[in-house]
Length: 240
Image (cartoon, rainbow, N blue to C red; front, side, top):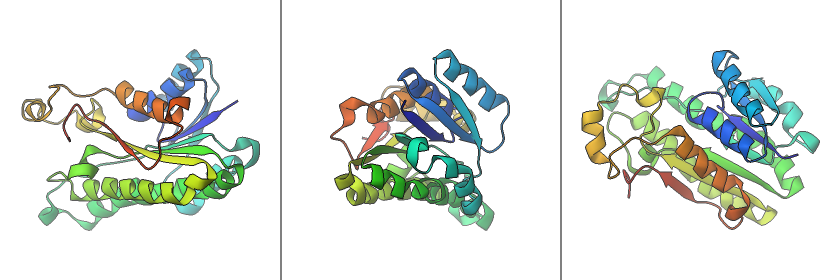
């Protein structure tokens, strides 16, 4: 059976990705910092789709602990077919007033966490000569956003990482792509002033987690076999 690992897979967009890939036929391993109601609701969705679900407690910012938690899945029969990096936080502030903790927390989770949790899989994927790595970036990483210098930096860096890694591992049959959501209806955007945001979006609505999950499903599926190093934007026209 094919397995998908969703890093940050128990809440919001991550939960939608776990559910969608389960419906696509993948067994699901989803990480979260601490198991609880979010991981349990994700379990119910995945199992209702007829697939096994494993909750994997993991802090993406702690490199050695993360590698230890991932150890059973790094090679052999445990190695996932699809790895989705969806861990991310925001600590918005104007750069002039941003403190070191706001900068470091975002970079550590959004960017360093990618290294800490995805890099350990590379030798196993290269030996197997196939696999998909899908990274959730952001429209803010494509165009920049005032008040999000830390967040935009981290998400732009992920796009650069995807493009460089795709060149490194493509000849071994590993596809590496990014999905860049725009304004998605989630906890992260619930406090945004809709009256100011919606006029910026040509489709005049927020996206849904399921629409982001559909893009991940495409990149994880058989119709994306000749796509690598690309950024699939799911933003309603916010960035064109």
